[in-house]
Image 1: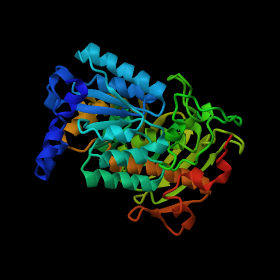
Image 2: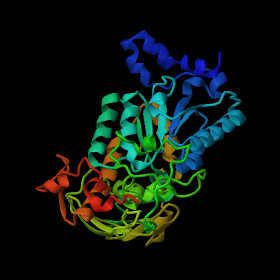
Image 3: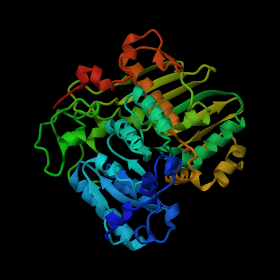
Image 4: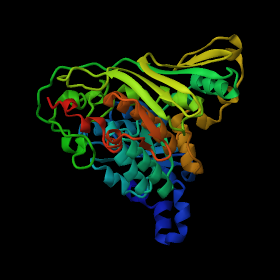
Length: 453
């Protein structure tokens, strides 16, 4: 009996055969024989599939999950066969060396085929942004817990749908964002929540200026290894289709180069959502606002010239007002969040922390000095939640609020209006033009941004 056969004779399938009476137990990780999964007790092992095998998956998500002793990657999926092959090699080499597993993982062009496997507990989705919402909902509907790369959505409606799906299907959801687990962010949260700064009057969340314009690009033949129709999400996602050109997708046979889709509004909103789901995320969390909505949003920004192929915002400056009077300034500058209060200030980034007073630097906080393991890694947090069935540190509700807040800022800039937002109804107040964009990416309503070549 080969590994593929053995891996399907799992607790999940056995319980399925036993009928609906056992359905409550289906949330537990699958039991897979130790000869397949290695030395870690099978009942404690989370079986994982990887959807999307580009730069972020190959260099970050695969190795970080592999280092967790209770996780085994058994499948990879991508519309680019070369990238998928490279990811499969990486997974197989590690599994042989670390766990003595000789049978290679499965590779899929169609993510639905991976989701049909009943031996997979969870999936890590690392595709381009325009696929996130659709794949997330499909995965939860298929009974999989999900870790979803940020930004998790392209429209506010998608955020609502992900929250609904997580609740309806009882699935664990983790925004795969590492900023909160960093020690500087955890220290900032501890200080702000302790009240040591007194009343906070100014909050900044800032991200780098890294997006650039690009001259019009020629149409090119689609590489033989790429299923471009599948990659674009024809008939499945909301990305307006465009002819293939390498700078609209990703470098060929190269996993290190930054993919062009990250600067193309057909597939991504750019830095305003990409890094906003780090820095603005952190600022909202520290202030206790990551499950609340702003009531007013205003902002300005600069797009590239109309003929630029890459067309995400080059810079932006957004102000959010909350019902309690809090104002958060979100802008392009450099990566940090800063909190200014009556009794001092603190500033935190990915690797730095500064404060107005030494006491703020030296104070001991459990979340910084003695955190539980799940609070030191987004991957550890996800796996622990899959096993315990307790919500992750960044569940769907938080992901929806944070990413949609970024999108609210982008909409205010794009429409050139101050927007009033009713969080209870999740609709704009007295603004039909803005409400028409709740279920549409910004590019869909802006013909001038739909540069084809």
